[in-house]
Amino acid sequence: MEPLLSSRITPWPYRIEKVIRETHNTFSLDVVPREGASPRTFLPGQFNMLYAFGVGEVPISISGPKPGIQGMIHTIRDVGAVTHALHRLKKGQTVGLRGPFGSAWPIEAAKGNDVVIMAGGIGLAPLRPALYALLDQREQFGEIALLYGARKPEDLLFTKEFETWRGRYGVQVKLTVDIADREWRGNVGVVNSLIQRVNFDPLNTVAMICGPEVMMRFAVPELKRQGILEDRIFITMERNMKCAVGFCGHCQFGPTFICKDGPVFRYDQVRKFFGVREF
Amino acid sequence: MKSLESILAVHPFFKGLEDKYLALVTGCASNVRFEAGQFIHRQDEEANSFYIIREGKVALEVCPPGKNPVTVQTVSDGEILGWAWLIPPYHWQFDAQAVELTRAIVLDGKCLRNKCGEDHTLGYELLSRLLPVIGKTMEATRLQLLDIYGNNH
Image (tube, rainbow over all chains, first blue to last red; front, side, top):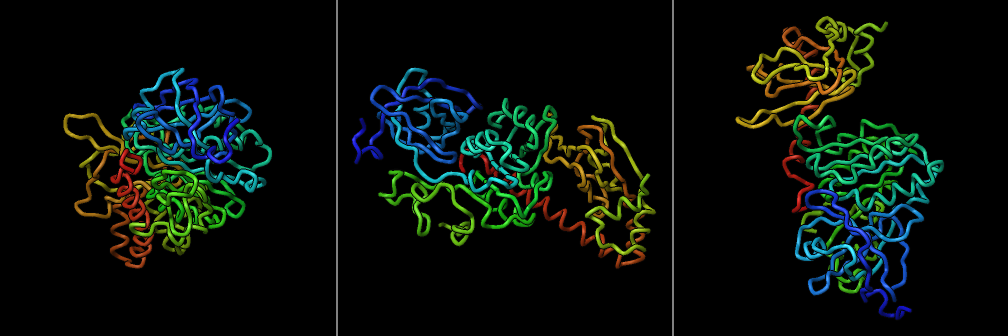
């Protein structure tokens, strides 16, 4: 049994069940609890703190699995010392895990509405569980549109799933990249340009966006131009998270802590601070 | 079958354009079709037309010396292709290749330039429609330059 007080700040041992190579610098770790650690459930949009023993700890979005399947998948870009150490781990090895933490995508609140999901780069990772949840209860939602952009075709995540998603009734999947060679038959341009290429009823649409902040700064006005209301736009914020429980203040964003009050925010609740220089 | 004028009249680009100007524009318009892989224009060729893509997809490519062509933008259904016909010396800056079967309305840029020269209100109407397209492309290009999905973000 986990000690009650320390359960949120003590990493628990999780075994790596599977390592999935997603792109040249991005990989996924599917982890299950080792003996003594209790299984956790998560909500789409939440994150865990993954600890590479002897190196350090980083916040990582939970990117799966589908509802009803055991384990938690974390999709990670190899960019620093900790993520590099995580990248070196193999099946059967152990990581420390704390979590899940943070707020979730508004799946329940979106029922009865069209849903626009907009992702850039690795931002698709925390949105994938939301997409799974929407598809799991497909009849509860109207049109579902996934708009996804990456730098190059080879940087696109979860490419094997696009056709499955496209095959579902009322699901529109639009992909774009910033730059490509002639092998690529899809769109080239920024992800914002895809908004006008999908059908949705703006007044009855919930939008969920995850990507680099600069992308979201341009995406939100575009969604508003299409008629989606501010209180129906949800974004994820990213800052330097350390404790993940609102103690340390590293991820303070105005009056909120990203780790505790976010990472998913309703846009109108953070608009005042969103895009403020050096904030 | 719909007339070109009726098609142009409902296109967002020409929304609100007076009938007499729409008739002038239609006088410079015709239907075109490009097979997948067909080049619509090549870099440095004279630019005397612009296109309203009705259906399909067109890739704008740059050919760096000694390297393979790079696609920097695609234009698809309902979008506008080309404004080099407005900017001297009226040469295309990119190659444009149909990625898939593409149907479009082509407008004769030379014909339009003459008509705009004779009637500045038409010129203003067309420019005020083209500038947002150019502005949006420029905004998108800046975002692409930022490499926003890269490792440093």
